Amino acid sequence: METETSGEKKEPTHFSELDPKSMKIVDLRQELEARSLSAKGLKSQLIARLTKTLKGEQEAEEEEIKQEQEKEKEKPVDPEILEAIAKEEAVKKEQEEEQKKKDKKEKALLEKKYIMPDTPCLLVHPHPTAKGGKFDCSVMSLSVLLDYRPEDNKEHIFEVSLFAEMFNEMLMRDFGFQIFLGLMKAPAKKEEKEEKKDKEEGKKDEKKDKDESKVKDEKKDKDEKKDKDEKKDKDEKDVKKDDKEKDGEKIKEEEKCEDMEEDEGADKDEDGKKDKDKKDKKKEKKKYITTDPGLLLSFVYYDQNHTGYLLDKDLEEIFTTIGLQLSRAQIKKIVQRVVTRDMFNYRKITDSIEGEKKDLTVIDEIEETKLAQGNMDLLKLSHKSLKSGEEMKETTESQMEVTSNIIQYKGSMINIDSLLEKLDKSEKDRMSMEKKMQDVENEIGMVKGSLKETEQDKTNLSSELQNVRDEMTQMKSLQTRVETQNKKYRQVLLNSKDVLSKTLSTVSNCLSEEDKLHSEIKYENVVKTEGLSN
Image (cartoon, rainbow, N blue to C red; front, side, top):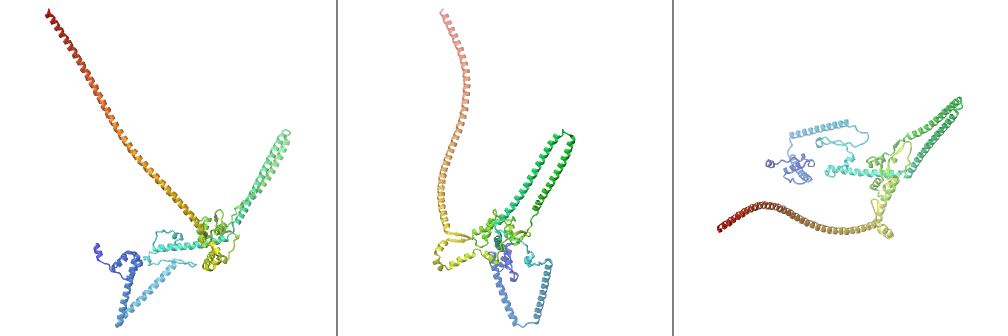
């Protein structure tokens, strides 16, 4: 199958139907192979090769058409051909009119679908024929566009991410300068401290009033209790005198107590009303309104978590990236004017109480332009002085000796001599550290050598120990064998002893019998000899 497909070459398509930029790599290679060109290389190389060949084909076809037209001009024109040309032109005009009508209908449909806004804005609508009608537009935030991966190297993604980065830098510079102007307009930190002191003093006065009222109430209660106790004692004494007098006194005492309770109730009601009035005043919250929404937007752009404050370090970083070439001392001075406890609550500048006016320093356009320049004028003056150096050298040699070693870098003045001294010190420290490191490495080498020797000794000792263990096991096995043999020999000896004892007993018995026989025989012989002698 592969030989058949390779043998049948595809015919090259017409150049008018091809668009190399929107084609895929496979189609590009097929077209190049059909034109008997090399299909190797990257996509950009293939596109360039195909476009070059297509241009050549177009030029060749245009030359052929010109030659044919010249030949036709030389020939007499037939009336039938003229009629056909006129018909073709009429058909083309009709098609153009139909296309215009379609465009008008599409525009009317779009106007019906989308309500046009009153304010001027940009409208984006995907073309229906782009990418086969699959092309679509979507609204994306700047944070989403900035959240790209470094692996995305495609052309359209790279362009969008680059645009997002540039737009983000523009917004950072603009909002940073707005914050800078807002801080320059803002009042100093002392005024805020005085306001806090006034508030604290007011709170202290309120606390004192409350404490005094409580003390007075406590004193009244104590006095009343004492009076009651004294009256009770008197009553107990007067009980013995007369019942009538006692009843009268009791009635008087009750009336007095009622009068005292009424007075106490009235005093308490007055104190309660005062406390309620103070609480109502506290409950009346002050309404704040954003007076400068542009400044609030610039602060919120940097405050992504919407905490309502910025740290002093964040403000310093913002002012260094604006491009005003400010020194660190200037930036710290501006920040410390407003910052309290290493943070700045920007709502104090952007918002204000209803009906009250904030005391902000007014900055004219001239002052604003001066602030926008920052330290750039000083840098320009330094460049000018360098250009006209030959004239200034004779008069300002001593000044140049002082300031020649000072350079401005990222808004801070840097002394080269001090940096070089620090560099020399760091190099010396580095050399000393390298020497120490070398000594340590040598010590480590010695330790490693001793470690290797100890390891070798350890291996030798372990091998010797193993040999001793093997010998011990052999000795144990021999010992067990000898013990078993000893037991066997002992048993054999015991057995042989028994046998020998038996044999000895038998032999002794036999010998005793033989002795008896011999004695008898001797006796008989003696008897015979005696008989013979007689």
